[in-house]
Image (cartoon, rainbow, N blue to C red; front, side, top):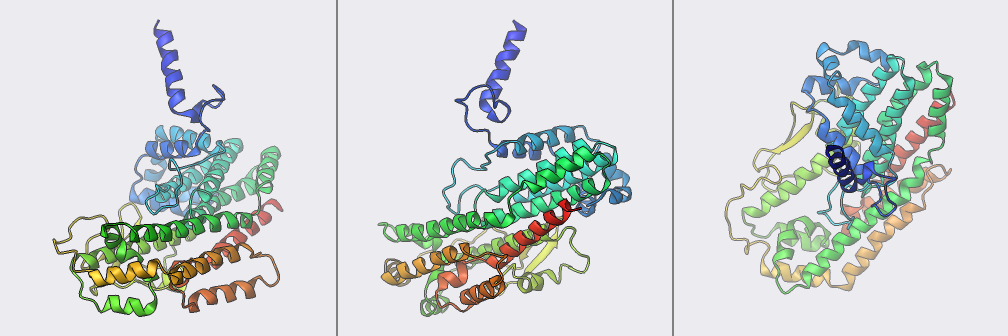
Length: 442
């Protein structure tokens, strides 16, 4: 009887988590890799600051010798076996979705990028330890899982997800490099090279990124238009601060000179802080470990000069944005005047003051004009134009430079403010292709 109950419980769990029940029934939902990754993160013990700092610097077997006893002890935690088992099982799935349905709205759930990066770097060290211990087959399995997780994240949503997916794959490649160079198991080395050789060029995914980002922008603009047609102006008023940038410049000047209430600057500042967090997150992905010369005082200017930001945002009430490093080796932005995004400490105020009724009416008129439709079509057309770029073509550099200049000098405020830096995307993809090509040619 007890055995029968156990079997029933196992069957019940399998029906809830199809990740582990791929062969039970063809009627089950498609296994979702995100389940495995999220479970891996759930089992991953919070990493102490010192340990995470050391983990971030380990890219080869030789670096393992420099690990402190505290970090070495961290990797003796029995839970890590479960963590990496979940990672590997997730990586074996064909489909990955971190939300029920991708609607390309701003409130769509997104992957926990920071935690996935932490998982990938921790797994890389684990794989290097496996390689050092004479288990190249296990190391290959671990590095492959990290790479596949990167591929899954790459196609889950918008351009930012794509760029982070590339960064996760790069984390795995340093492990593959050690495997190919150090392992004496020719069969494993051959399998590893064959796996990497079978991967399509990273540049082939560009169209997917661009189409997703195009849908995101199109959906956001369409939502604004829908809000402008509602009987109540509440939704349009609430979103005004975040979408006012699409107004023609002459209308934006009117907004800046208008009398504002105390709540509006807080919302605007929160939006700025979110932009800054997204930029520093990408910086952390590209630089691991962070160069010692890239200090907290230099990061703000570096984000602009390296094109992570078009311009450094300014607090609407002249507050100063300061960056700090947390105990978990993560970076956070703070305004010297306003609260962090999501902190409900705004003073009570009359929201009818800003934007004014006349500004709302002017905004609604513009949103439903042929001028807005023309600007929207022109902006979305930029994505279609970018899809045609071939970063391996002889004239690519000239074309992409002309394209970026077109964005920077455009009088279309949607193009100028909402179109991301495609050049960096292509450069990251080409760099990854070259890394793989160099690795498998050894």
